[in-house]
Image (cartoon, rainbow, N blue to C red; front, side, top):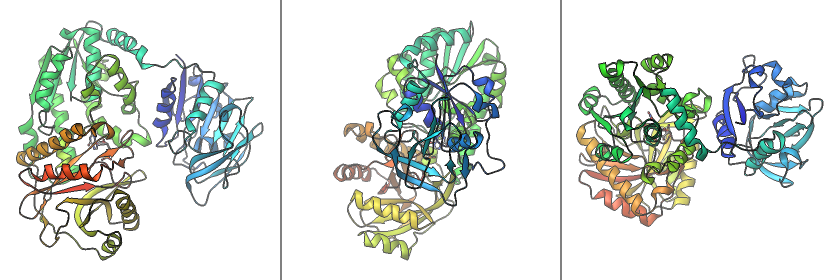
Amino acid sequence: MEKIVVLDSGGQYCHLIARKVRELGVYAEIRPLGTRASRLRSCKGIIISGGPASVFEKSSPQPDPALFRTAAPILGICYGHQLMAQHLDGKVVPGRTREFGHAELTVQSKDSIFAGLHNHERIWMSHGDHVTALPPGFRTLGTTRDCGIAAMGDEARRYYGLQFHPEVTHTPRGVEILKNFLFQVCGCRGDWHPVDRVAQVEARIRRQVGARRVLFFLSGGVDSTVASTLTVRALGADRVHGIYVDTGFMRLGETREIRAGFPRLGFKDIEVFDARKRFFQALRGVTDPEAKRRIIGRLFVDIQDHILASRRYRSREWMLGQGTIYPDTIESGGTRDAALIKTHHNRVDRIQQLLAEKRVLEPLAQFYKDKVRELGRVISLPDEILRRHPFPGPGLAIRCICSDRPLSPEWDEAISAVAGAGGYGAFLLPLHSVGVQGDCRTYGKLTVLHGAPIRHAALEELTTRITNTFRHTNRVAVALRPRALDPARWSIRRATLTPRRIRLLQQVDDVVTRFLHEQFLYDLIWQCPVVLLPFSRQGGETVALRPISSVDGMTAEVVHIPPPQLSELADRLAEVEGIDAVLFDISNKPPSTIEWE
Ligand code: XMP
């Protein structure tokens, strides 16, 4: 099989590059930047990713010096472009400021990697340092107003450097450039197609498992469902056992659906482990979001550990099956959060031990999510499973906001002035809303706008202004029901995670999910967290809706549900007993994370 290696310089786009290459039908693998050049001999081409470091920093990540003597074609992107210039005797100068955003590329040579492009193309830049002199043998292939050598190439050696990012959607013709690199420069034919891979994956499962049996912890999510179903197909239902741990924080009716649904996929042996009491007990009185996550993660691992250590599974006759997908197996800048979250479950001590004993089966470890869905389609998994919105491990527990004391809305003159100019009233709720800037999490208050109908364009502008100007707020929501609120009469009360609150959240989450299906909105939305917060007039709760579109959860945009539909949904939610208000979260990520905490 043809292979492209993406050398990871620590950039957040490393996975994006590998995924784009795979989408073009060529298998791509991510390796650390310092990988020995001798280990890259079998690949058709090498891409060096961008990264946050400067080539002038002493500790900046460096490739094996022999890399630039390999015969394979190399494409350096951003930091990779600068490394190429530095190692091949060109000149890089430090930038005093970072150039960030759109630019226009003037294409100077329309052969090789720029074949088929127009004279001018929109591109996305994000860099500080830049190349000012070409290495010997190279010529300039493209320039921008601020960057004399935005693209360079040495056709004889097949080495290319791009100061911009062809892998992001903000470079609309970036895919053409990658395609040219793969098919014109590296001579790939494209032999990576998941449809052909089902048989290969099943053969690998049979080889790896031999005569043993496999235990899967199922969540009802796409990854574990596809992985375990492929295993049932490969080994037969008698040799695969599924356990579903019910934490109590799943969606309404989920446990029932798992019990009924898996036998329809060919499973014989499904067990539900009821841990609801243990989870609620462990979380009694806990209000801090991170403490909630830690407790849930640890308890889940303890239960898993306990089951794996039981007499039945201790025997070497058993392997543990996991739905681990490619990004989970790699420690890289862009997926550090996700990796951390998942290492909790997929790489804890006992699992490391099982890995060492070669007792872990991960049939999807080579695939990205989109391909996992395709595999699922090839093996005819029901559409409802494959289309399901992603659901976080800690479930509804992180969507049920708690507070250790009563809090009052806060008046902020400057924010109110900005909101007032847009026709809305405003106040702040002193919650610890989570935001994200660069690679760092931030905590800020929630701005609530109210008193006027939904006008998406105006609200989008207001939200950007508010979160860009005021550091103490990182999330903005607008009131749908009631449309105007008197902050003097509303407050956040002390609240913890209780079965009653989770039941209410399950109920409103179910109202929202049904509505999205009924109105054909479900497939337009990537994920729609429904959040419960103890903000009320008389002891009730507020629901916040957060429909977003995204590709991988790293960035997200609000989905502008048309106002009449939003209004109908708000009416239905306001009818639920115990619900006093409905908010619509109108913040993009960044600056606000998808989940509220
Ligand atoms: P954020 O809130 O970081 O979410 O913008 C990005 C994506 O990750 C999911 N998420 C989690 N998944 N455990 C998980 O398994 C967690 O603790 C967790 N926190 C967030 C979130 O639902 C979104 O898809």
